[in-house]
Image (tube, rainbow, N blue to C red; front, side, top):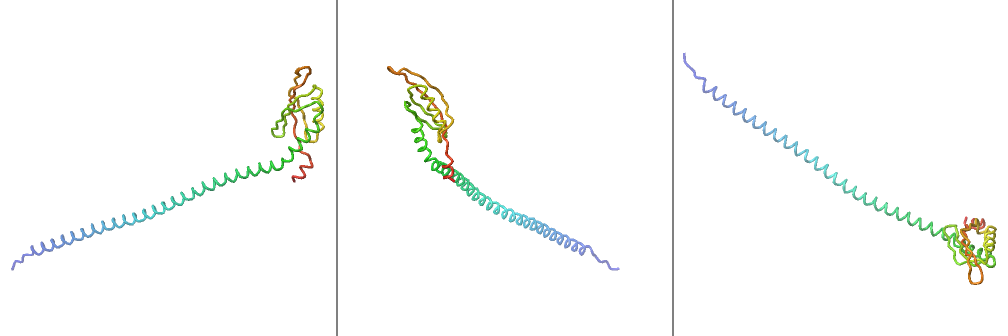
Length: 188
């Protein structure tokens, strides 16, 4: 019988399979690396797209915050202007009141009473003056109480002082200024 040596053929076949396995393994490793790289690239693209959206939103938010600050400053300016308008309107309405007040003071001031000072705070009027006697101050208070434009007279003090050969009474009287019904109707 003839002897056939099959060893080199099998060895060559084994080396070929090992080489094919190595190539397949290298290709699988390369394919795996490619898949990982493509996945990283894909997610990197998603992250950069989201970051650009976030940056755009931040820029828009900054613009809107500036607009909000401007609107707030305009609101404050509007409130200040409305307050000024209201004050001017009140002053316009109260303009004839001072004329009525002075006119009424001249009418109600009894003989022998002289005013040295007058101060108004809101509707409260402070009258300082000199009278020939304290009874003249009482007459002034009665006149104020009967007045249309003045009410609620209050005496803070009456001091009698000797001035040469005569005696004079220095006084401080408070009264409240009243608006008449006719003036209220004119304002409406």
